[in-house]
Image 1 (cartoon, rainbow, N blue to C red):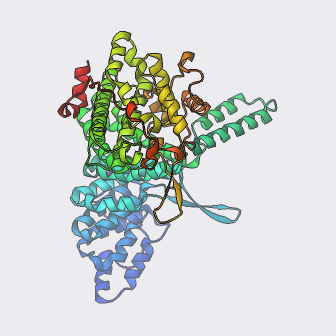
Image 2: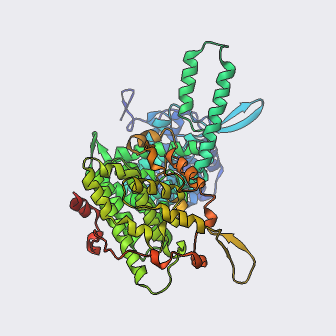
Length: 626
């Protein structure tokens, strides 16, 4: 290493102003009981105005006697670790890294302390700003040297990991403990998440755990910022912006400044939690793209490995979480890289749905993800959609067969038949969004395919799925199937409306009454993406709701006005509000209004029934349907 033409390592230390003995002599005197120079050494190291030459001089002496720095000198080492080395001259940085290498090699007792010190630099340092005589502490988000400082931190971590193979075991708890509070600024969270993801590049064994930590934190943000809250905040921001524009109109001619200000506003979320989540989603999606692509081309093996890690986190955190709106789009984005990934994800969801060993709530959630993914993912071809519909409808028909074979009375109970109703709603939802693709090209074959699904049997079975499914889905499914004369649903819908009474529950020995909630009201996890910056990556992959231009879809005097209002919301691409339907979900407690026996399953055998072995692979069905 050359510094100003000199060999740095072989030249004597530069002369600096210092007091006391050398480090070796100070340690020897301290061992004998004389601590005066020892305390003086700690005081000089803690000087906030310490110079680069002084730091280099001290570090060189510490490296010489590193074997003497046992746990008895813990306070001295902690003082050295607090030296402000990041962002200093290259000579200081290299000398400090050499010191860290020697220290963790000779004294592994200081490994955790060294790791904590390095990780503490993963976020911008806090600075004190004096405003009006008051000291205000804030993070130095605008430091132009942050990228260089972060590079130095990761170089130090790589050195430590090279000398201590067990680094990953001790590093993971430190990364979790040092994660900033979610109320911190977007920049602080963004920097920390970015640095955590960089760690996975050179310590790949930690990637799954790091992704789990990051996604777990982002999930907390996601569920705390509901879709309605974000939309309301955006609407208020737009109203305020219009009011400001009307007030300032005609006062000044500042077109350039106004246009620049508007462009910055359009990329910032009005909801503060959504703004932080948007920043983190942008970082995470950029990481996914960079890992999966090498020199602009998709790297299949790296993509597969990342998919496995994300899928593991999905099963553990995302699938069981209620009302998450955006974090699941990480897998949506990854699956868009290659059709095989999308089919593998669908196959995984299908296995969860049909598995009796899984909790009912997870099976219902899997059905929601399956239906919403197929409806919204533009990159899934019609062949994949048809294969998944084959699997769903075959399972639904087998479920109906099992219920019809039982001698006991059948009733609409979402607690008993939750996965069945979720599967039905998923199938209806898929057909609403993808029926045009199925019918395009060859209308005759498309209609034959829809007829082969035997939807009439599903609609008319005693379990009565139209009674439980959301009104918006029911009304649109009825309109579409009526237009193509696949099945006529309005008679059943009207009968359900007449029998729809409030459903309540009370404990056997008390007077408390609670409303029964419908588990199908949150069954669309891939509803429209609301975050602005990260949403730019999702937009070209996303199937938006196209308003039906066929006015004949809406029959007159067949459905109540409430259903038509929900349908209007659905046509506008909005999630239907279900507050009015929560309290009218039929359960086993209202067995007096179950479907009459003459409305049971028709004796027609399902034409597209497949064996259970064939059901286990969606990709095989893609080939068969083609």
